[in-house]
Length: 159
Image 1 (cartoon, helix red, strand yellow):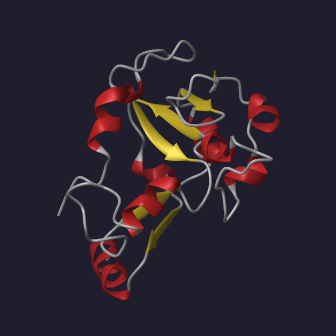
Image 2: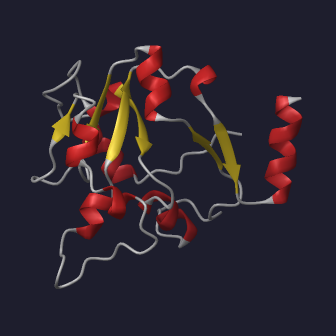
């Protein structure tokens, strides 16, 4: 069953956020992916911080893929070096910039709270990879779930 799990206020803003690189358009013209595990969105769901959603992570089905699969498929994409609404976040469409402009240590960090020594950790943790318009099912390389019950449901669907 489909159920919204997003922050309504942020989703409304995504439609108004234009992108000047890649195919252009707004954030709503793209299929979004966080670049690493332990996304801030999942933390908000787990801790009950999303208004109207109280089921935590248990019923979620989390789909994964790789940047390499997207590139081989020739899909247009853009990516950010942080949260999409921060004024200091930059957007890119050049694959070489993935190595130079993403803070991969922060993307994969287990703890990402801002500190006095580094007050920009949360923004960098929320770097996104966005695929324009459509993401083919064949490019999914993994499915993650938080509960055995949902794992069984997903297995039944795949069978």
